[in-house]
Image (cartoon, rainbow over all chains, first blue to last red; front, side, top):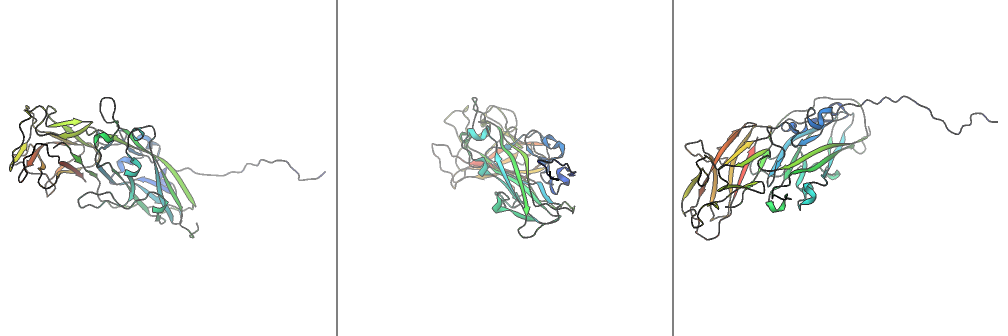
Length: 194
Length: 181
């Protein structure tokens, strides 16, 4: 008869993990200045302190409930990605089209026409799509400790005619959601450790 | 003139930072967040564009504002003359001031102006505020209308047909509307 033999053991140990709201997390997500209205932590889906982007009827505007069709819409500084950890991070974004909405019923590639970019658009006319994309790991940018990125959104629906959009039986635009969610990635800068 | 295209810039410059330097370490984080962006009709979008009048010279087709000179309600044998400058600030058969309304339904004050996108030898379009007796052109060089959130202005259209040859088919030009912080 041996001692110390066992078939299984379950041992509970304390692990204290604090959940913070987005503003105070190691990866801090906060509304921007220019267009932070679309990422307010106090209205719509963000009312729980978790940042959400709402360019719809939920956000605090003067009645507008979405972006114009056949237009280039450029929104500087919608939200910020801050690094409150103790080492530099590589940050990038991915995003998804909405499914079962306007998108799938039309020929419009909303994903190709939408971009998340860093910084501000070129202020002198003509208005152009900002170029400093943050979408995809190949466009990752380094954010040092204590720093943050200003992230804007551009939506280029120019060059489309009404027939390109999905319409309902009355010939009206099938308006609705075309962007569903974003994923923010932050990883250690290679070789820097943590 | 059957098409209009519009260009919107709700954007600007800003400064500022988070200012917090935290402590802690993480190797990687992937955070998924809701992002709902909706397509809207011209009437309900952040830059609201509405027809004014009877739906003739300015109309809403497929929820998008467009202009027609002459309108379908006018005799088909009329039209604009050559080498002229026309100001249209009511719909055909209407006493209501204005052809269209621009409403700032966004969250920031924006400067609004219009730009003509046309081939050489075709009519040039420009917009003005119909409440301005001088009919000053709002083309951004340098004049524009500042609209606070919720504000609007009623616009008319100036059409310049100098050096534009007469032809049977309508000319198609684009009015590009800019709204910038």
